[in-house]
Length: 430
DNA sequence: TCTGGGGTCCTAGGACCC
DNA sequence: TCTGGGGTCCTAGGACCC
Image (cartoon, rainbow, N blue to C red; front, side, top):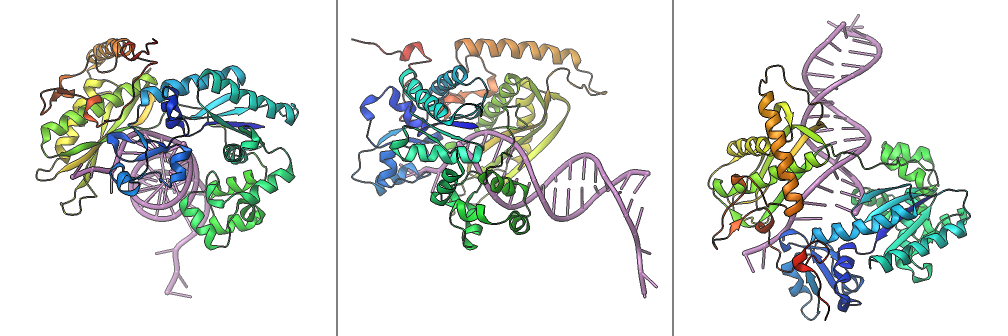
């Protein structure tokens, strides 16, 4: 038996923890740069606000609605969801974190279903009471069915936040109620194809014979989904492992024309990639940089390009990766364009010890020195806050005379405080 | 004025090997 | 007229997820 525990409207629920006055009110959370809506409260969904709506269109579309708006605050969301995971760890030792707001748990099938259902209801209560975030729990013999159950748990109050699909009768009933496009693993493309074939519910799909699925799609991923809907457990249990590629990219609040400004941004993305590599104990052998103009500005000339570089010796050194990324940027940069977004991707990732040194790369001593330096910088930034120590290439003076770095180069006009991670934001009681 | 950021897996096809 | 058979590795592109 699998369980999925999923935070309801995760980012909105996190914001409400310290804003209880926003209960039952429409709330949305925006993407980076206050770009578009990425999370909505149930009340905001009921108003008809769609995910991905650009913020500047929100007031045009909903002139009369009083909507509470937040910039995204990942420091807060990471911390609060971490607390949820810690409770799950205590209640269900066999689990894996699937995303920032979801955990799968494995439950012994020897337990009576009624007991498991009760366990789920109590888990919801405990998380609600200890962290303040509502979760929905789905329980079923396959992960795809568990996801479906969690949707029912969210939708119908009667389940008390926990829905179990434990018999074939319940499974068939659930499949009939479930639109094919909502099935985990069926995206927009496949949903459109299936609809065109007259398949509208999960039940319609599951009823077709396996041979038909194989012949129609010739694709093992969708076949697995079909099997899971029919009760056969076959989506592999993906433990959270080390990332195989790491990307840091941002859109700029405005547009950027000059190379020097681009350098600061790209240097910051490169430094972040190096940090992420070190945190998971890995090095990368390929560095790639991309650069593009604003595709929404059809009135302006467009440019999109990327360039990559293979390294003799894989690295996770900030200095190294920043320097290489800047070389790539110089190759990509064309004057006369207005740029909107850039990013750094590192690939060819492997363990950081032992690093395979290149036969002709004789800089081993330097390599060790840089490694010690990065270790110290990481420790300082962990204790005193990120960006306490950084490379000169990572900062510049903005037009307002303030130093611009990674954190403050993003627009975030509606950011909440961080009462759980910063002394300066701690809540005072009168 | 203003439109996000990060991942994974699978497959087909080309280059190359014997 | 007629030109084998069996592999591996890599890459780009497409699909999906949150």
